[in-house]
Image 1: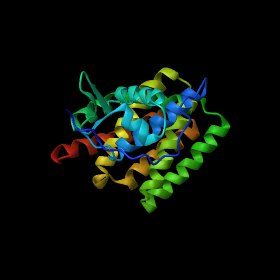
Image 2 (image 1 turned 120 degrees about the horizontal axis):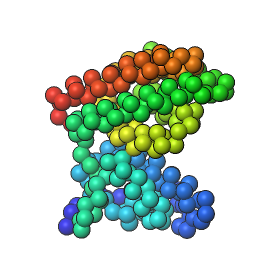
Image 3 (image 1 turned 135 degrees about the vertical axis):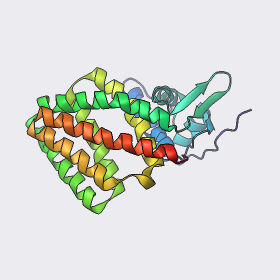
Amino acid sequence: MPRTQAVHSKAVPWPSAPTDGADKRFADRAYKELERLIVTLELAPGDWITETSLSERLGVSRTPVREALQRLARAKLIEIVPRRGLRITNVRVEDQLALLEFRREVERFLAVQSAKRASVGDRERFHKMAEGMEECSLSRDENEHYKIDFEYKLLLVHTAGNDHASEAVAPLWASSRRFSWVTRASRDISLSSKLTARVMRAIVDGDVARTARTTDAYMDALEELARRSLDTAL
């Protein structure tokens, strides 16, 4: 039998039988928590897990956990192995490079659409985030960088207003977050913050051509990091 990762319940218990709109909220919360555990390697590559163990860890019924696991499988963070169970996938540079190739196109599209469609309020939020990222480029505050980056991506999909693109990029971002965590020792937070801020500034200005260029420059930096990682054991 495969080894199952030991778990301990440490979350505030959730109702065991959510109904109606609550189902999605519980599934979303389960997804975010499980993604965090995988991204930060608390659930490490190669670990075997079960719906029951995760349900106990989160203090939630198996239904939202099952839905969250399906989403994580689409993000290729877990693998459903027939007749064996669920396993956390390994981190492979080759997979990340292939992912970035597609992510580049989708992310450029979202950024360009945001530059075209963002409301005055949205542009003010992008402006504040750009200021925050520029501060991170000086302070090299990883936690603040990742917090702003997460909020930026949520705003990006909101302002772009294209559900198909949003659904396509969400699992790519999830997988990239884990790769960024694994390679954080060699990641230049200052450069990443600066490049992200430039994309935000271009969106604020509504400059479509500059938005596309700065998005590509940001993706170039991510690809360079992945290629450097080819020479490093993950």
